[in-house]
Image (cartoon, rainbow, N blue to C red; front, side):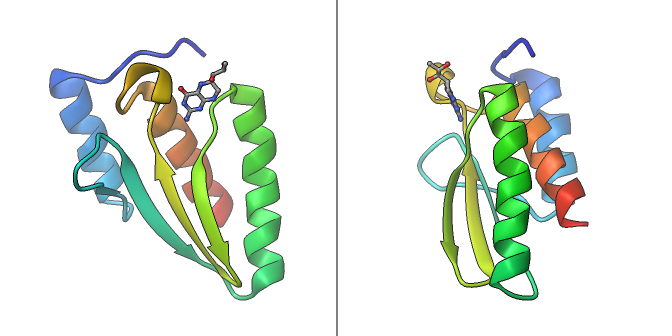
Length: 99
Ligand SMILES: C[C@H](O)[C@H](O)[C@H]1CNC2=NC(N)=NC(=O)C2=N1
């Protein structure tokens, strides 16, 4: 997928959709974040595994932190110094996989 930094109304619309699904902007950097809470570690790590395969296929990788059944995710496009269409695509995959 071709990466481009989101700007203007494209960005506004994407952020509006994401915040409707529990994503928020990170303070002090151009990134989005969400905390996913699963039933147990098995569910959390299973989800991470499914996301990891997609992320590798996209060549777009999350920053994430897992403790037991909780995964805190931050998405940004390091190469562009901000939020791109790839972050939006990966965020929606994560939401879909989390059911
Ligand atoms: C060299 C490699 O293609 C780049 O470093 C890719 C890998 N995964 C990436 N993931 C994310 N989130 N942002 C990037 O800019 C990025 N760049």
